[in-house]
Image (tube, rainbow, N blue to C red):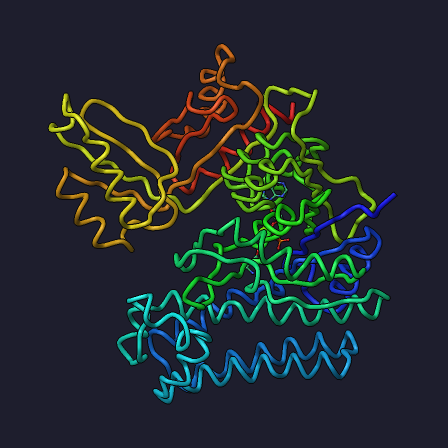
Length: 486
Ligand code: ADP
Ligand code: ASP
Ligand code: MG
């Protein structure tokens, strides 16, 4: 019987220190994993984001301190792993490159920075793609902060892949590191790039398949990709899960494994609810709803490729690998009414009110066109005759121009810091009296939680509503107690 083809992703906490990396390598070997996808070590992406901000907003010699402290942190891990000379050389080279990029921006040596940011642009792309800067100058730093940021962030995953590969070698695997940017081709929407699935399959067959056939364990990076202009892109914070799913799809893998710091998917975030239960089996549909509704254990888009290719997913605990985790498959005979409760904090609730909307054709289309032009995705929507309300991730105020365009269509009010609370289950929206039960459990003698917006009916599997941020966790606990904990 031929070997099962498994892709496994290890998140930041699974790579937090030498011990954690050794444990992750052990888990990968135990499961005969062919392709190991790594996140940056715990906390590193946040640090790199700060570095990128300082380099694009106010480059100064201070910025170099962040690189130095990241270097010390990773050298400590390297020494704990007794890193080989070859890997140490690669690690040092990455820090030198990052330092040189920072130095060139600080010293306004833009041609050098440009070479690092667009490695092949001078040969191929300058003719074809108009908005690539032909020279980088101070103003381009302001114009292209996302491109510079994505490039800086990529160092987190590139560094951890060197450490993981060495730990795997030491544990007995024949390993090779493949730069994910050679395979995960994306569009140029930096920070939230869209993967180009056909190109990914082509490059996987060219670069990954031969290594896997030769019995190598491939180590590659999650989160990062490359745009046609040769600049580095990222898939969105937490996007390593999505990368791993894209690799699994392109390889026609038998299984995708997601290893993290919890034993699988639970009925709610264990950090919010104490008596959660482990879910042993979820359908793709339920998992996708849960991930979109804010369950951080899975990046929202992870399930899309898995469902497309019908590849089962296993979510397990890196540090308790024998504790049974969660399987995610096409179908399940288990049909509990409520599977899980989820929270998505930091939502903006935007309400647009205008008399014009009543009876007018195409009014919503105009609103959607504005969001599409600014590449801002809408999470929830609810409409009345003269008003429409949306939720979005983050702060709408950071999209000043878009806000101006919306104001031309009507009165806009924005409430920041809201939370979206979702009850996920099977056929939940065909359950008589469900809304009553939800409202009743949110209203107790000592606290009454006001619901600001409700979404029901669009999905059979999800009932969700928006509350003020300060009530988010309390709502989750109450719903969990009412529908799952009892
Ligand atoms: P990683 O670094 O491994 O990608 P993340 O922090 O992104 O890990 O995701 C794991 C975290 O997801 C857990 O520590 C947990 O707090 C959170 N989480 C949120 N909802 C759930 C849920 N329903 N089940 C399990 N974990 C959840
Ligand atoms: N390192 C990236 C982040 O922190 C991607 C990931 O962890 O999945 O967002
Ligand atoms: Mg994650």
